[in-house]
Image 1 (tube, rainbow, N blue to C red):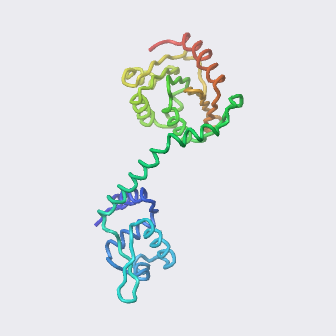
Image 2 (image 1 turned 120 degrees about the vertical axis):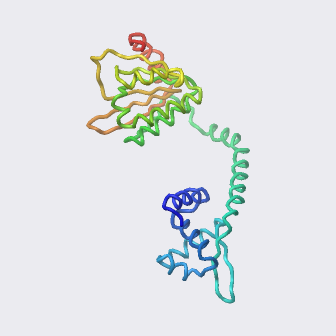
Image 3 (image 1 turned 30 degrees about the vertical axis):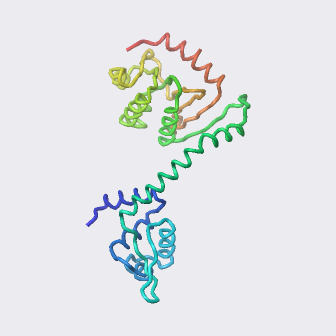
Length: 260
């Protein structure tokens, strides 16, 4: 008897092959019943016949079900579970083929890209999920990441564990980071693991408090705010703006801040 967790894991894996939750349920039911008509399958699953028929057709197209005949009856049969390995191998071959032509395709796409760098590119993310998405984008950094943030606020919003996991993954990519924080327990905690996280931490005087932050990597600036308890993250991509922050503003503040 499968547990709810087992079923969730199966659905997650079948999703890789393009099956949604309903289609996954149809596949598992077909495995249990053996060859079965759409009508019987619909009755067993207590689902609309048209809905089941649509799911069956999709799964046949995906290679997880096939059609059989018994006299004049059309029966639906689930592919053997081991056939998933064959489908996985086909997916891997497709990825290899796509990767082989990707370099050429990228060159073609880059040639289409506008070369006008005078207008900044701006993206807006909202909420905690948007903040996390911004963090993931910083992992593309080709050099040092610079952070000027009121970290007590943002660590509470996004979660200390999530930030620590992000620090580890960032360090695993060999990315160095300098952090400007207010004096707080989280700053001390990060500084204690500076070598592991590949970071340098400096703190500002305790009289300063704010509800915003800046991340800088490559030619990007991410500006976070928590105005009226609404978290937003605005990413500006512009070489001159980024360089002004990185080479002037950040360095001035860094020299005035105190090492931990």
